[in-house]
Image (cartoon, rainbow, N blue to C red):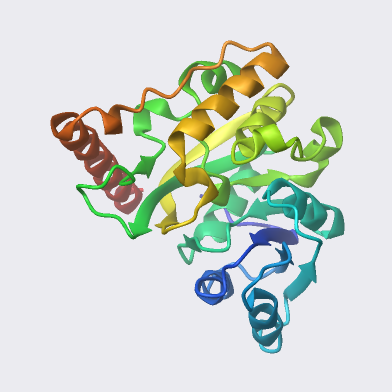
Length: 278
């Protein structure tokens, strides 16, 4: 991999809602990055716990953190958009307030973007941790190696294989596509909708390494699979696209769950091995 000849500012956008138990660890994973030219914009969605107080306390030491607060919206789209509008960076990265990055996530992604100026959006793989085990329906490596999407057609035919907390993109792209759709009917799948729009105008690339740990816990927006499936169909109807529905094989009995999770485990091992050999 070539050396980076310039170090663009990266704006890291974190939507926060009732994440006081997790957000400090999340921000610590940013502070530990080997790439250091970034700003952190954490937008509190009027949490009812002490999330905003926690953010201001962290900001006393982590000077690159800007805590903001907006009236409660109930959707990640609004705080993310608020953060994008307040951002100063040439590149935008997203991280949910309960997820974690590997220490070299930004360094490797920015080097890739520098060496591939035609790529507008880059993402990598994530694995679940927290309230999850091999026998859980939420055990997941995303994307599976054979389901990684790098084009508009891929996203339509394969579904959303892009974990939001792994994405880095050029801010200029959003001037052409617009920001996250704030339609409440797209709540929890608004990222998929945006990736589709971005894939129409720029190249998407996949960096085949695990660079994010996706935390599983109670009360997540993305945990209701049936609701997500309905909202994907809403996107399909509103965009007039033949989007693939969720098969929900994880809910079709213990044998299917075991086979599914074995594939997930093998995929995680594949990414780790290829990253070691790179």
